[in-house]
Image 1 (spheres, rainbow, N blue to C red):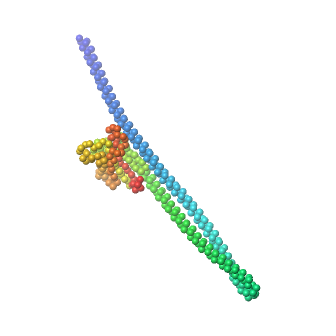
Image 2: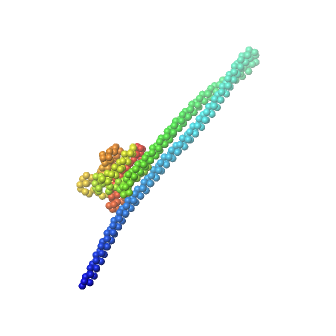
Image 3: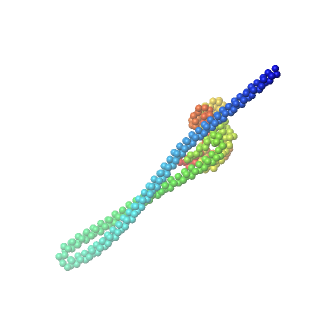
Length: 365
């Protein structure tokens, strides 16, 4: 009897041990499933971040193409300037040569006129002498008169040529003035373009530095997938996910959201001449809560109010200049992912901060 009882106790002991191991294994399986879900969520966030980066690269490529076109225009203007300068130098050279030729011709003509004038005097004296000496010289006298008339016509012709020369000189001077004015205008355009290019480069460098500053100050949240910072040629974009900024269907900023906004404000306070747009985004779910729907009938009002709360925190709590900010809402019409499940919807519920330099706003870009 005692032996049977001992065997029974041993069997119960082994059965109880097997149950404990099964419970332990079941717990390990559940832990692995939880970790697997977390990894899948992280992979989705990374894929989303990669997609953002690809779009950003495409956008930067387009902006770089525009920058190259501006540089090409500058090169063409410099070529036109060189051609106009060469033409001006050629005209000036031709003008100098023509002036020298005309001056030499005038000197020759003046000598001829003097010689002919002397000849006229000599002929007149000979004519008087011929009249006194012999009537036979009447025919010769007529000939000499004709010669005198021809000389007078020649003198008149030379005078006319002198007037034409002066007119030509005046025309050439007017052309040179116009060319100089054109060159000055081209030079001014080139200087203006160089100045604009320098401003664009300086702005790009500044925006890049401030983007790196934002990424560094928000590095922990970026690694968690709560914040995304992107920079382009002329702007910085900061995406704040709902889970760190607001409770679901709430407009009050969370403590973690306040800390993030403080980090962003530190960078914004260092950027001069900027425009900041804060844009709220919602998911496609309509407002169904009867209490909330009285205040925010649609996602339009709700998304705008979230943006307003962020702007008010920046200006009223953190003391930033209100004139720099614009608050707006885009409801659910600008999603970043297709909403197949609740996780996708949570990604679309976000707050977007766009930072532009005022220079770009004035240019209309």
